[in-house]
Length: 297
Image (tube, rainbow, N blue to C red; front, side, top):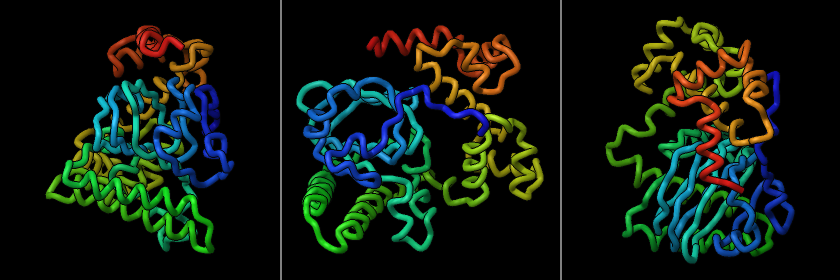
């Protein structure tokens, strides 16, 4: 992409970790919140982020989708997503931050992590309310993670990788393994590659035909696959990604709408405004005001 997005606060693991590690941070939620009390504002991560709630309430927002918090809920975020939270009462649970390369030296297929439906960047698949019968098992798994994160031995990180994979597989089997249609799109290689290409090129490439060429399929075949697996047209998927980035940039009040239009490669401000209102239902200014009213800080 020709223009870099550095306008929304972007956090790295080392800035949040007392140990200043680049690839991994594991903490109890109450300790994490005490150490980072100012993280209520909308921000991005450069890493994968998951939280499992065992106590507390309130709400949290991932890419402008709002979710009520309840004990037994687990949520996953991929790098680049924007989120914020508003907690109520005493919060308890677990936080795990890990880099995109944390599993690469451990797994034969580096893309294996992306095969989990809740790590594909689709917000609606990333917040899961686990059954109460699994709460004790999950809590024990996370407690085990805490224990091993505080030890020091030769294969400590490999053990942590195994424990994390155990959590991922448990969540997947509970939520996506009961005959549900959810998550099947991540199993189709063309859909997975299409999403990756959009992430890499949406600033400069808006035509489904251009993506079809990169994927070595015909535009009609790509559109049919996207329709079958995602229930929408290929062009709609591309537009949704552009709209999402526009919303992410509008979080920053220091950027004018004209500057955002330029960053997103729109020819002019009026064209961008028409695009945003058509697919986002409100003007950029109205959307920004709603965000400011929600997070006045």
